[in-house]
Image 1 (tube, helix red, strand yellow):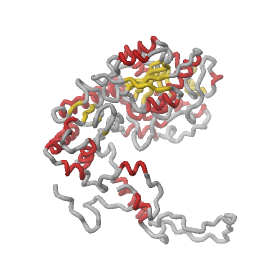
Image 2: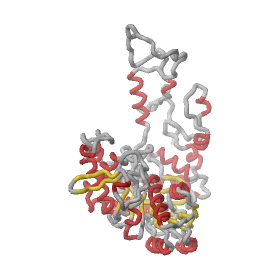
Image 3: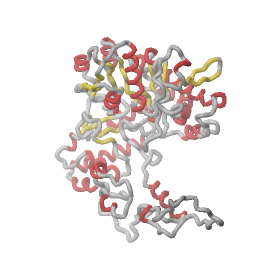
Image 4: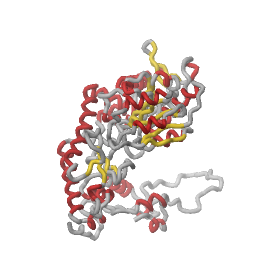
Length: 505
């Protein structure tokens, strides 16, 4: 491919070059021109501004065009396939968005009297019912704001239960195949973290786990399906081993998308599990939010669930906001302001009710089918990290790229030039040069085939000795490859005229 043609304007077709907003305009230009008010009295007490505020001077059309052009540079699920593994970046039905904005749901205030928000409390209560039904668990804490927040709540209930037994336990066991937030959460709760290695099949090494289990272990934290995209086939034995020494089994449910409607976590011996509503039940994911991480709990842990929570008595919904309201409970207290991510509850409930039990079961089956289809179509040109079928995501290592001069990063950058968002790179850490691909259940066969053929073509080019072209990728984007390490270590967070020379390029 020849070098892209340069243009006088810097634009390429309808892809317009866009300067920083601070580099545009002039101080005397403004989108609003208001007359000086008559008889104005200065009430600033000598605090008048002595220098320019530093905002760019632009007209209204310039401001609108600037942000429109920036938005056109965004890649999103509405643009194309988002194969990020362990992120579940899938289509969000617009019905859910419409429901979340309905009058009476989208314009509520959290301080309204309970008598005026009976419908909203019913939404929370009904969503909780669906989550308990799908997991087989008797209780759920709805207020955690995201997955890691849910993990924290789960570990806090476990710690409270152990302390209530009059015990002090110091350790939490976390497999190497778990999500990275798991050890961080355990550490935040004051526990020492010990890693459990994976076996050759990418699952928890059961014998290594048993060797570390004793009465000093408070809990084990297992991601299932795990970060390698595999179902923990020994999960029932893992639960039994933990319970035998009085420890609890915490499950990271971030990958519940692969098993919803097919496996009930309660039947596996799990004591508590967070659910990412923003991954499994279609609500928006990305850009730092919004998220929601309800935690399902066994009866033993339910009495420590945080406040507030909703109950239904004689057809009316009540908000339990104080521990004294339930003498059998010993709640943690509040872990979030107000009542959780209500907008996520409405979206998730709309999704679950629209899909129905059969639709949710089909969705998880399709997610697994699509990942295994990618594995089957690529395994002759890329090396699967683990043998056998996968769940909703497939992991390849970089064995195929050995001696080509092309790295996993190079392949991902070249994929951008082909119009695809890259897969997850170098994660999970237990796989060298990992490429983690999650197609989700919402992509068509035609989309998957084009992605697969593109990946095949890139691997063949790498093996044909075109390493130099890969090192230059991406070549067709508004910006080329940046020094991402320098950008992370020395971020320039405030624009100044001299700062542009320090930015990573």
